[in-house]
Length: 85
Image 1 (spheres, helix red, strand yellow):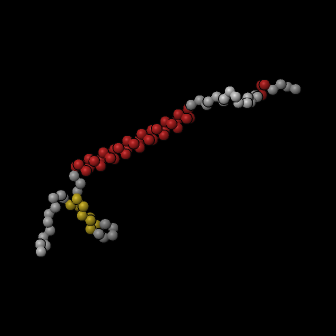
Image 2: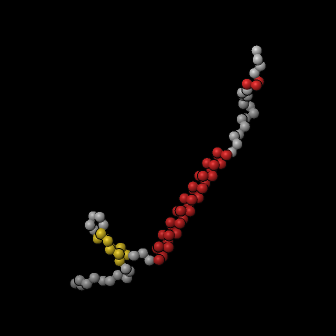
Image 3: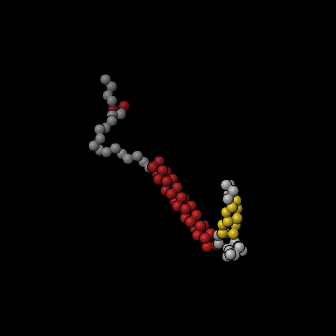
């Protein structure tokens, strides 16, 4: 039996979890970090686009003129149309 510990090719970062378990994790290299950074930027861009669409559609509804009533609707008489008497 060989009791010697083999040296890993990558640096290992060890830490203790709150439960007292020792975790030994390999340090991420540049390629996984760049990939994760790209995913983060994609999520941020999608959120900004979604928020801009929501903002402009709500502002568009607020500043548009109301549509005139259909021509076949019943007219509502105004006070100036009422004859005294």
